[in-house]
Amino acid sequence: MADAKKTDRQTYASDFIKGDTDQAVFLGNPHIDNLMTVVIALGAEIWSDRQRLRIVESLMAKKGKVTSEMVEQYVPSEEERAGWQKEREEMVKRVYAVLSRDTSGARPFGEERKFN
Image 1: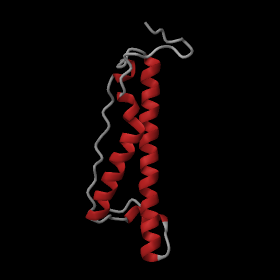
Image 2 (image 1 turned 135 degrees about the vertical axis):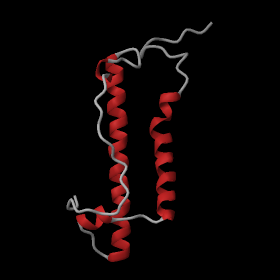
Image 3 (image 1 turned 30 degrees about the vertical axis):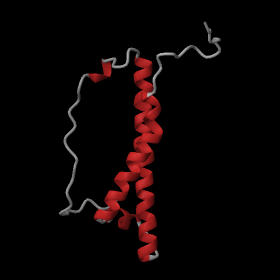
Image 4 (image 1 turned 90 degrees about the horizontal axis):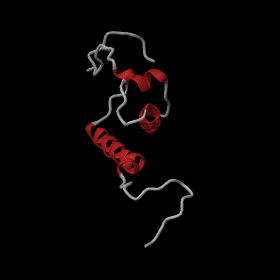
């Protein structure tokens, strides 16, 4: 990480406000809620790694070297931002589209389908 120097860079961080959602069940089963939390967190981790990789690739192409400080201080162009946005949306569709599939005809694994 870069040193904690004062910069003019815009930040999107806000103070953390603890809620009581730890005890809430959103999807009808706390285990499913936990799995969804893991899936979403893993997607966020993958995306942040992918974005950092794009920064490293860009710096290597432009400068021929990369340092941690260079990665932390990198400011993408508008064209890069648009490309990242498109790439992120495509990843979200690939990874999470299955969550919106029609499960009205779903049955337990191994159960035979009965045809009339």
